[in-house]
Image (tube, rainbow, N blue to C red; front, side, top):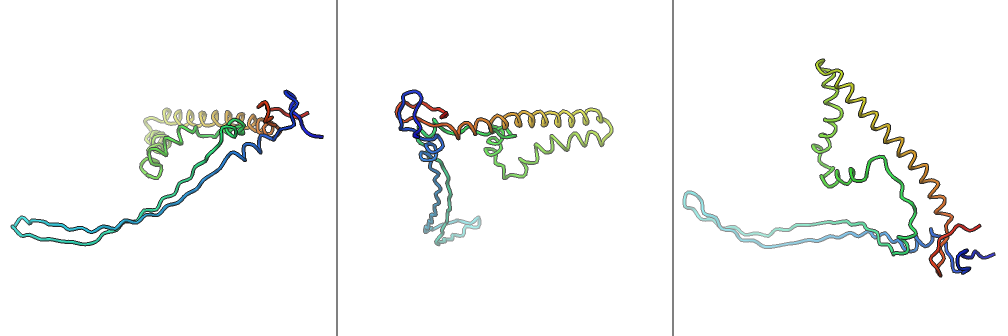
Length: 177
């Protein structure tokens, strides 16, 4: 028995997952370039001496790029996106700042962990330090609970998406009975 669109009755239907995969392409490229140049230099010393130098220099550059190309139809029937514990804006911000720099990574660690512990250890700001750590832990736990709820809903949405079909005739998406 062929699956038919409940909206128009057409038999030109495909699973949304198949349509999405057919219209999504991941492209990875790599490049290598090499430059060589000749140079000549002249310099005058403070003692009035004159020197010239010449030579040959070269530089190599290697690059990698990864991208995704997607048709409009594949984008329209894309699966639901899973949300992460860290907000994507936060992660993108760290990447823009240069996550490889240990200084940039140490600043948030210092503010969030070291300062409250130092406040407790100093004996002057014990309550403030404990309160700071408690608030941080509470915020992390609240974010974790929210993400857990999102992921439970995502699992239901993803299962629903895997069962959805797309009618090529009228554009309706449906779950067959």
